Amino acid sequence: MAIKEFHITKSSGEQVKFSLDKLKRSLQHSGASEDMVQEIVKRVQDELYPGISTREIHNRAFALLKKKKSIYASKYKLKKAIYELGPTGFPFERLIRGILHYSGYETKIGEMLQGNCVSHEIDVIAIKNEILNVIECKFHSDDGLKCNVKVPLYINSRYNDVKGPLNSQKERNFKATEGWVVTNTRFTNDALEYGKCAGLYLLSWDYPHGDGLKERIDRLRLYPITVSTLLSSREKHFLLEREIVLCRQLEKNSFLLDHLGVSNGRKQRILKEMKSLCNS
Image 1: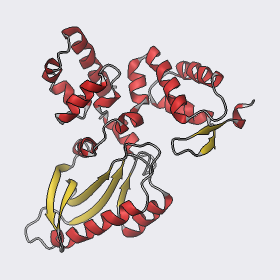
Image 2: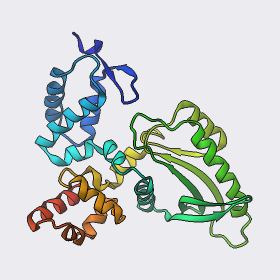
Image 3: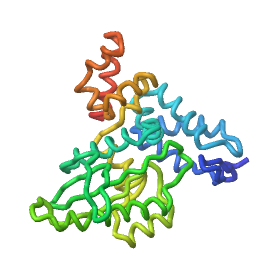
Image 4: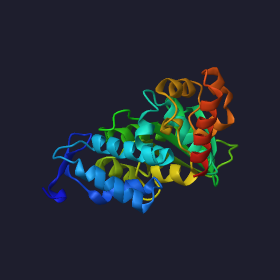
């Protein structure tokens, strides 16, 4: 059967045509060489069957990359690693704060703002170029879910409640406000249309095109610790509970590995992995 006839099953259950180019691009994005990409694509291609899930394709490509070079495998699994920040949305909020902080924003997390009607706890507040950004994060731990129109509708109502009091403050260090909606998945078309119409800034895994979460994390080298191929699930959970979300945070707080009882040899391998990801 020709490859173009293959249909694969997405996490949402939707059946779509298999795209060889998409697989190649995702592997190239990991930093793997062209020869390595071609070799892995051929291996995965030989194991395809109609209806195979995208998760299984990803797992096979990941395993092959890991055998070649673990840092490529870590970068390849970025999307899955963000899902592993769950089940709560708090580590995801700290990831977003980190991305904005290293992009030159002055940031605060979990601030209470008084609205016209009620007070609201805001996930992230970020100020840059004299614009105060009120940011709400919507984290999904299920990769089959999209962020539908109800999310920006709800967040816009919260933003509108606090916008008036913010803009009427006599002493303030900003000229304007902007509302954001950030998700680790994708927005539905209705959500995108509503967000544009309402004047909200939308940020998702791959939106805006060329400047989504994926591109920002790669550009800033702000990988979450969950991309690690050396840390166990228990160790990742321990670190996340202590608000260590980014690889570069673990680099600076390596003593936490001692608290986990990690041997010195393994500790050095983990820190080498963290350094490689932060400087790749």
